[in-house]
Amino acid sequence: MQIIIYDNAEQVAQNAAQWVLSLLKDKPHPVLGLATGSTPIKLYNELVKHYKAKRTSFAHVTTFNLDEYYDISCDSPQSYRSFMQHHLFDHINIETANTFLPTCNKDQDPRKQGLDYEAYIKQAGGIDLQILGIGANGHIGFNEPTSSLRSRTRIKTLTQQTLLDNSRLFKSNELQPSLAMTMGIASIMDARYILLMATGKHKADAVMQMITQGVSSNCPASILQMHENAVILLDKDAASKLPDHAYYEWVNEQNQHLNEKFGLFHKF
Ligand code: GLP
Image (tube, rainbow, N blue to C red):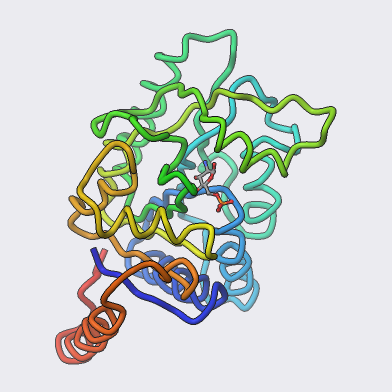
């Protein structure tokens, strides 16, 4: 894992955007894995800014989102489809047909919906760069603690903490689904590069567990220790319970020198 600590959430988003731009520049048909939640909103704002300034194009990009709520219509304001349209897709030149989210339709077999999603990802050639946030309980996507580390896209029951954390997005008269379809931990691990962003003090415990404790399904994000190309972008608050800040800084300085000398190490 490469751990990079920035002063604030804006810098995290700006640097995450550079990774996405670099993928879009390097690959003629890039495949991007996307996340929802408050954390990536700033990244999406950055990407829209770069697109509007004509610094990038999404014309040949395919996207796969991590998750979607059970039995929620696409046009419901709480659906992750609406979230993505609102924060990103409506403002860039992406083909809607190339933007995929898992389906979790109550009238269809969830196992088939999961398998179909895995097949779509495969057909697209796999995910080049997967954007991730992290739940306060260490979840990635909706892979809650105790999720199998080899899990694939499937229906999951959300924990009380996740329901509570996400309840701010639902009005009191709206039904908050307690089930969701999520890419599995193994599906996420198939991505060629992974970029996890975490900001704010409320993520400090989960971040500390992900980086400094053993790999465990109790903290699903800890599996990233086993990924060849996982980059963790943190603000100071999210990094506040990590030891060795000076070492991470030192590593990043060295990497910059190596990049200058030998070219970027993260060619997609
Ligand atoms: C949600 C999503 C995750 C996200 C996490 C953190 O439940 N399923 O993909 O990373 O919670 O969200 P936030 O960025 O709002 O803290």
